[in-house]
Length: 346
Image (cartoon, rainbow, N blue to C red; front, side, top):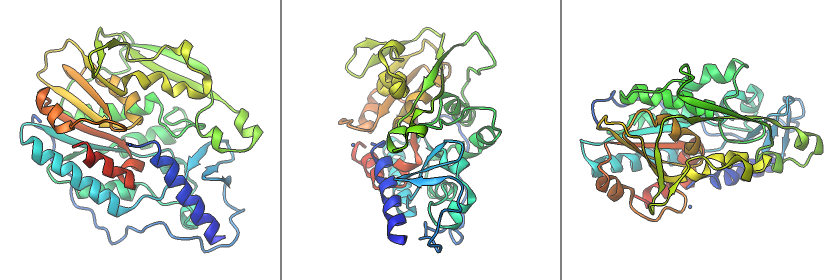
């Protein structure tokens, strides 16, 4: 049983790695966090895990309500290397550029039954995020975990999908709101219905369903809601082609619908504002749903999906006069070997 669970954990780490990469006055850095109580994921002590809520299916846990959760097994060593890399970005860009770290917890952080932690089937995400923040030097942490927690647990909001490992755009909204507050920039809130066009798709079957060999679970679907800013902006690809940030819904199947944000993966959006602030976001696919929330906050928003990016982020940031550089990545980028790709595009 121990060998089987270890294999499951390694499989989950591999799958999540596949989702990863191929200033102005602002609040101070995070305070130190003691690592004495931080523990890596341990092997289960019980030979029988059948009493746990839900079931382990391949590399995920399927809860009794049908929610799929990927097992988490990141390391503190990788997280600290990630923090050091972000510190080097800050050194190279200098005191006139704010550098931020926004490490995104997955749905497992909020919905994983305690018994899975107690049995060592999965590690906790929050201590790893806090450890990264404690090891940042010159980089401003964004406490997105706290920003998401109450919304994720109230049972009334779709912050994460049940059938997909991504957060929803509403989850990204609460993170963007926290970032704007930390960066001291204006923010277009959802309370102003004139700022956004709310759109919905009734049937979404995300990428976790493909990992579950169970026809009943596979058949389940959920609603998909996204928000397109009504503000007039101009979005271009990095080679200068003008496009729509959002992909046409008619071209996307239910199972692939998170791809509605795909057009924005490597883009520059000019917002028409004159704040003097220009933002560059470096991230993974979680950042695709995040970036549009900041079209009312910065003059320019550059989004760099680190997977396959072949230029230098530092040189591009200098060339474009970037004032704020945000690393917006899921925890599975920051605490696995995939984090090395962030250093490779420096």
